[in-house]
Structures are given as structure tokens and as C-alpha cells.
Amino acid sequence: MSRIKILDRSEMTEEQARVYDSAVASGSPLGGPYYAYIRLPSLFEGAQGLREAFAGTPLSRREQQVVNLVVARHFSARYPWFAQVRASLQAGIPEAAIKAINAGETPDLPDAAEAMCYAAAREMMDRRTLSDETYAQAVKVLGQDRLIAMTAATGSFAMTCLTANVFDIPAPADDPMPLAS
Image (cartoon, rainbow, N blue to C red; front, side, top):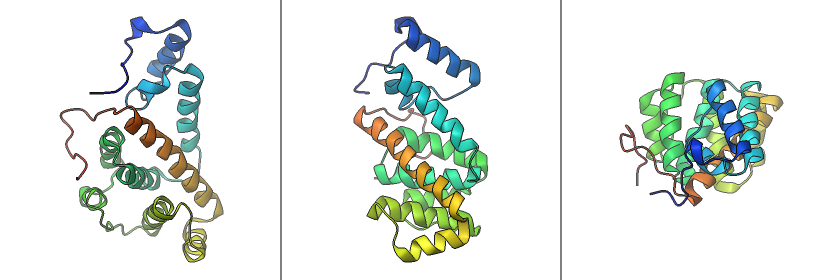
């Protein structure tokens, strides 16, 4: 059970309802950490805007999904993991790669950029930085701009996972690939 009451639309303040309705109209996410963010409408809007901003970066959808899976797994964040598994499958990430990340193993990602995103995100989570060697390799494979986007995506999704964990936002009961213990 969540530590935070999930607000029904009828319980929201005028400002909460405004940003909620805007998210509904645009098809933006409303669950997971957004259950907490809605209590602070400017944060809710900012998180939605940041999510949209990532769509305009040079990071591909699949690269973004690899990063999100690594971060959700690192934080053992149940709801974000659930949401990212679904989004990753839709983006074409092989189920075997997702299962490997869930098991704490290196996935078989034949695309060099996706493999670099996995390695760099994993190192960022483990070391809170990149070694000189990994940094040089990431610049070589991704380029400076994609590395900037990948680093920002890693940090942004860490906020999502921490929020879901702090407020104990559960994955749905029908989660098809729960986090490994």
C-alpha cells in the first residue's frame, strides 16, 4: 500500500486539477511518482515538461529505455520498473535484455550506442560518475551531446525512482515482469 493517498480528481485543488487535466489531455503519465508530484502542481508540470524535453534530445527512444531500466533496477523501484518494462518492450528492447538487467547481468545489446548507454548508466549508478576510460568511450560512441542527454536522463529518472520508493508506490498487481529480489 502506498504511503501517500492517491488523490481522486474530485479531491484536487483548482491548480492540481488544472495540471492534471492538462496531462490527461496530452496523454502524459499520471501514475507512479506523479501521484506524489500532483500535490505540488508546479513540480508536476515541471516533471511533465522535463519528460517532454527528453523527447527532443539526440538520445533514441531505445537508448532512453535502456537508461531507464538500469536506473529503475538500481533503485529497485517497483512502479518505475513496471512502467519501463512495458515501454521498453514497445520500443523493441528484447525481453531477454530486460530480464538480464533485472537479474543484474549485462544484457546482450548488439547496438553499440545502446550497450554504451547500459554501461555508462550502470557505472553512474554504481560510482556516481564515470571513469576517464568510460567517459572517453562514451564520447566516442555516443558523442558529447548524446552523453549529456544520457547523463541528464539518468539523473532525472533517479528522481522518479526515489519518489516512487519514498512514497512506496506499488506496481500494479498484474505486473508481467516484477523486479527480481
